[in-house]
Length: 289
Image 1 (cartoon, rainbow, N blue to C red):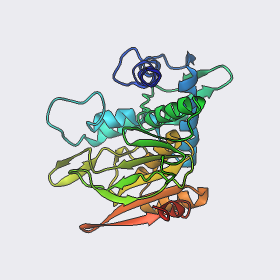
Image 2: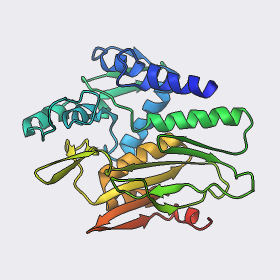
Image 3: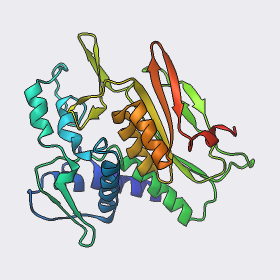
């Protein structure tokens, strides 16, 4: 019952872009230049989002919503046949994108929009929900658990037989789920999140358009990175970084992870096959299974 209460509050009451009376919807409809009082949960997520936005040079940007909607992947999806938007429409949507147009006042628990941006926290809020379930179990004294919400994980301790938990990395295929690789939590408390371009996309004239939109260009990514899986202390951080890495592409993502000692498992397309790229911080988790 407590888990359900937490999830309902975080989804329906705070972070939903579909519920018109959610806190996020009210923030999106709030007047520019006027302070908006936010909940502790919203403040936590916005501050973490701001950190990842800065560290990835804008590859992770929760104000990408106008572009997501324009390309047909958001709550404002058109019922007509999907199509590639005109360049002028992309440029217009881009003018309303930029997380730096949101001023966060932690002391007052307020945010101010300096431009009419539209915020979509779906690439970080789900991970935050997983963290809150883990926190509840920690407070209850649990020494071992495996929490999963929509593919985001929070794992602690070992199984009843004393062995480590063994999560799987999914193969980036748009068909029945298939295991690509498995790893171990090594008995540690870890969070895991993944992102990929292989389930949510459309094709026009033989060209594939992914739901992974680059907020810096306004267009779906066109590189060969198919999936990114991140291990971090929090599922919210792993969630945001996995999304950022899918926008950045294989080489920039790998370099960012190595500089920050971030554990990431990257899967890229190479012709009809896949190749993986594993950061130094992720490698130890592949050793014990």
